[in-house]
Amino acid sequence: MDTIASLFSFITTPVSWVIVQFHKVYGALFGADTGWAWGLSIVSLVILIRICLIPLFVKQIKATRAMQTLQPEMKKIQERYKNDKQRQSEEMMKLYKETGTNPLSSCLPILAQSPFFFALYHVLNSIANNDTVGVINESLLESAQKAHIFGAPLAATFTDSAAEAAALDASITTVRIVTAIMIVLMSASQFYTQRQLMTKNVDTTVKTPFMQQQKMLMYIFPIMFAVFGINFPVGVLVYWLTTNVWTMGQQMYVIHNNPTPGSKAQASYLERLAKHVTRHGRTRNRRERAIVKAIVAKGRDRNEYERKFITGLGREGLAAQSDGTVIKSEVSVATIEDGTSATPKRQQPKRQTKAQRQSGGAKIADETDPKTEPTSLSKSDEPEDAKPAAAAKKAAPKPGAGGRSKAQSGQRKGQQRPKSPSKK
Image 1 (spheres, one colour):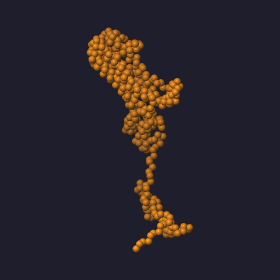
Image 2: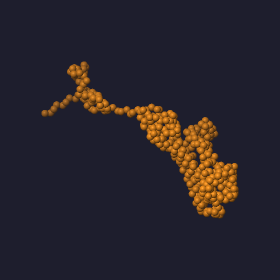
Image 3: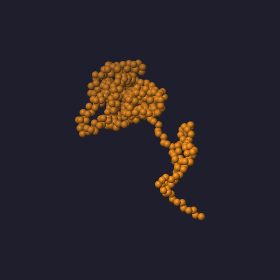
Image 4: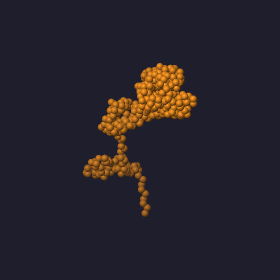
């Protein structure tokens, strides 16, 4: 580790200078030789570095989203050229070039933060060895050695012997308890951050090897922190725990406000957005308008949660526009994918009774209109003088019918069975 730290010695002086400047501020409040002054100086260094890395974090989010979008295409390439690894690599690089995606972009914040981490390790290790480093002179070195965080010296490690802990004016038991707690918190925060990403902010509709790799990293990273953490000084543990907490909070903010499409986080976000838009009748800010605009632009390519969001607005009498705004719809019906309105369900005709069917299918009155009077089943629409002629015509047998008579309504057609004589 000393060899690795020495490789980043070029940044040791800037890191030590930043720590000293923060120490002057906190030393005036808590005392120059206290653990609060030096511990908060390290925490402030982390915050300053992470603020400077926010543009890289945004780029990391975009790169991760782009990689998730390319997963189906990558899987097709892997299946097509599974027996030709060289051709598979060439097609992968071609896909990255066409889409402008770089797989290493998701690692930029960690890679950019590594020099500061190893430089801080080199500074604290020099303090433990009673060596001046960067802008830390003899007086600052003595002050840093006296600083204790919860009873553990700033430069002490879990693997220190009792004599080394005593040289720093501390107990080996206290040092190991404090470092063990910090290592557990550091590993737990790393595990929770990765688990939050996998369970809430990953598109569950696409199952790819990339997801399996992320699940493996969810367990591997905490183990790595636990193994290497026993060799880190207390100050480095403070640094790494602080950066893990920052990453966790930063990721929670992104998941809550800008989730990955198709993830559970998006479903929760669109439910909240639908409630807000329904309550106010409009999108409230530019971020909401951008999200609604992106959903409308997808058209038929919307996922399940986005279709549910658009349909819910339609049921409330609202319509999402292409510019991201929401207006009141004239007809309060659900809007389907192609932009048309959902027509009401066709009603089945009312079933007629047996008497109505036998009477020749008389018309049924419209029950929905009170002005429409029901048609009488006993009266005919024919004039009175036409009734006798119509009855005579009906009674007259047709030519060629023989002795057969036409079956009346309600009777069985064909030859009628003679009635048996009544017994007296």
